[in-house]
Image (tube, rainbow, N blue to C red; front, side):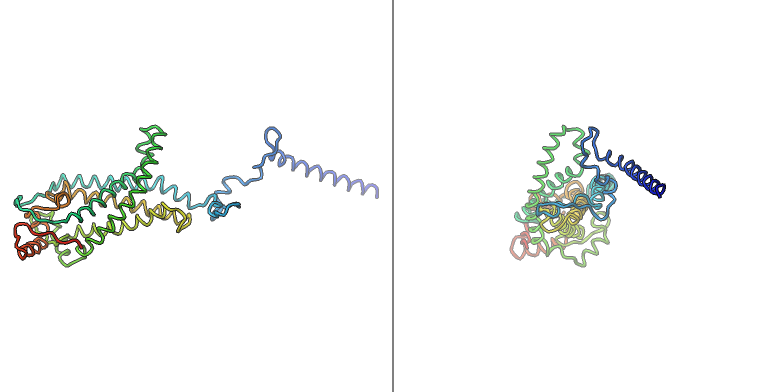
Length: 339
């Protein structure tokens, strides 16, 4: 019996020694190099945290529950889109549009008034219509330039500017971007109300498209006050404008109407629509300036040459001439009243 008890004591002693030997590395890991306790020793490693699905949350004492979300996988997807995908897509779309317009100018050149200028003017836009257009146009250009800085500033400007100067510049651009959005909304509402009726689809739009929109010199493309191309730009601008405004205000006033995931979606929508919007407006600007003789005068002075109106908006001109004749002023038709 004494021998059995001695053996039991020996086994227990060996077990205790083995347990202590296994605990020593764990205790050492929880101590710092100077022997002080290491408070982060029992925290899971970063790889384990990043692989956790669907998100990593902690416990907080403040009422703002969204602050408890430390990391969530969609955040890394969004970051890749914002820092990589958006840069490539934005550069290809915008630079590709500029290149395409340059090629069009080299091949087609400027569309001239084939009959030459008549010297007679036709009123096309009222002062209020031009105000609404320029309010929207100028605010859009400001929004576009400041928005491009948000997307491409670190790539284009930061390498040639001091870091502090770039930070101050970008902060100013962000404030300008935010506050200019209110002017853009006003302009968007005005042009929507003023020109909605004139931009409704009609049968003549199909014929305009068949005739190449006036860019094929041997064919005549009939059109009312706005042709099919202008109508497409109008409806795209209206739809894209609403999309960027809604998504932009979700970002400008965060967490009032959506959560983190919703804001990520809003930023993606805002960025993609804005890039496409810029591309379309670049084409609109090109046609209204370099691409077509006499087009810019419509918004610059409100009047266009009679021969320009015959070639590009003949149906509208016929209505205006008939109206002016009824009013006793055939030489200078009255403008169409704003809707």
